[in-house]
Length: 496
Image 1 (cartoon, rainbow, N blue to C red):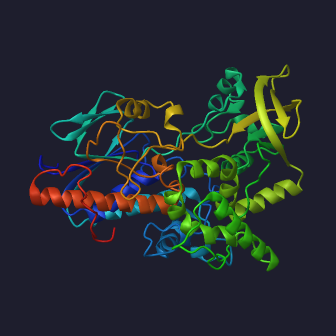
Image 2: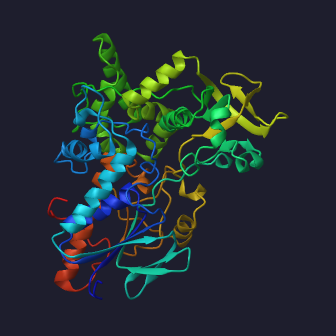
Image 3: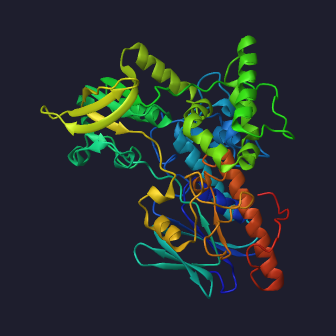
């Protein structure tokens, strides 16, 4: 057990971001430390994305892009080569491990294994605990800075708190769609794809509607197929965009000057469109464009005004995400086979209402894009794959409500997550700054646009850990906690 003088860090959320933060802390802490992760799931490091056990649910990028250690790009590939075969998995014939798209549950295994290694190999003793439960409130505590209160009444004291609250599925009610609740109760509408098992009746269904056409929609269809569904898939999405396959292409030669980036979204679009025309003229793959823009995104986003950010989010966000978040080759091959078999129909439009039909099926009222009159589609089951809610003011979660209500967190101006220091993840607060509160991952979507991606979450966790390590070093030397905003810059710590 840690002594009273051992600093205690509580991480709220034990999905990918929370587990990686603990991993980096264990490797970088300059003194003995107590770390507690508050997470309701029985396993750490999985969250929503890596809890699936379906082997057909794959990473949406090759292993070489998903290492936990940016200075070791082959680390995950090496781990897969030595560990994944024990689970009976190998890449397709002729595909190297570094270029393979591994099952997501294996990536969860990788995160767990590396967390265990980091705790075992930490340079200083780490008292680590997974506290099973959900945090519902956070208060100041005179003895230890913070008191984390759980839903079951338990309380945890901590010197520092890291919010790694992860993803919140966007329910159909939150989209404004009219929905007969009885359909959800009897499993005809699957409102949360990731928390409900597929119904056994899928093998008897003739038609399934998937609301959305993103990677989650593809996951839902693959999941239904693997559980015996052999009928027809229908997809309805606002713009009629369909998830694209990921191809292994090199980024287009640099056309953005990091020292003179476009100052407005209009200038950026003009530059990007010119590069797109150059790519087309050369007969090259358009996917080379995303790789050329992606490295500049943090600087572009940080420099953009609030109005410029909103201009990007409202009309352009779906197109950016379509170009960046693409499907694994095997997943895309399944989709193309399904289309050729006549089992997939993709519609551009908006679902208006889900009600019970006279024959017990689901009556889907929807309006095609560009049309004024709705039409009706009869299906046996509906999957909601509209994605996730990032606006904390709209999420039904006690912890988030209490943090906002007390001013311990402030909604970001974009409506995505909360405001924070982009360099450290220190959370902005309404009434001054109570030190020691940080955020990593999805809560920072508005601060750093791609903070939901693996690479950005690793970078964010590393930056927060660097700041925490400096705080821990300072308290060890001086015996007191430096107040927030004192200008203590994060100094180099041992590579985490």
